[in-house]
Amino acid sequence: MKAIICEQWGGPESLKLMDVALPEPGPRQVRIRVAAAASIFPTC
Image (tube, rainbow, N blue to C red):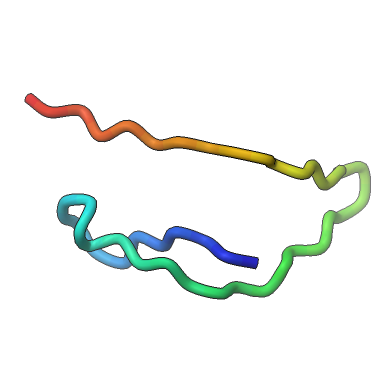
């Protein structure tokens, strides 16, 4: 699956789009499908 990864502190330009393994749910956990998501970076 695709994931946005933050490996170091910085602005949005430091984020990386990477392929990662799909995690398997453990006992008493569920997996949900996300159609869309967003992240907001506050500015001070």
